[in-house]
Length: 133
Image 1 (cartoon, rainbow, N blue to C red):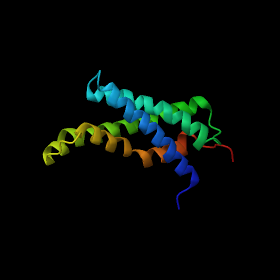
Image 2: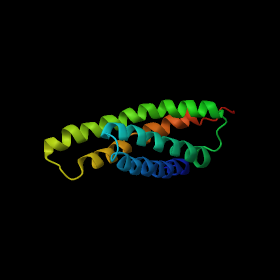
Image 3: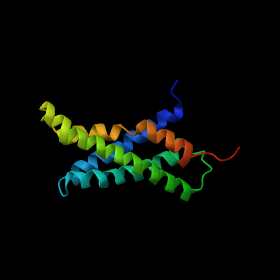
Image 4: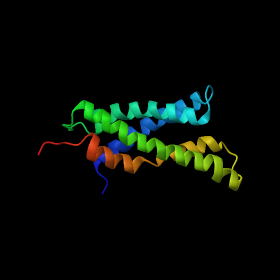
């Protein structure tokens, strides 16, 4: 069964992903694709932290500076997942199969979706843990 907390995490993540995805499209107008992915990911990460802290893991007793540190560490791993999937699809798989319909946009959308489960587990266990018995 899917918990209400995980559903709230998905909603918060969806909003953060939209911020990430939309900003990447805008940023790609002024910077290279890889740089745009990384900067957009940072925008999405800040959005996700604020939403998760307020609406998903509000019972956390972990101090704010620990939350921020763990959030950054877990999301650095997630940005590597996002970047790897985005580049693999856009630069290798899509050209290999002849896909030409917005390959970078579709690849980035897939890349953003990949770390959903690993991030939830990491944030629940480390970032927003409740250390109270």
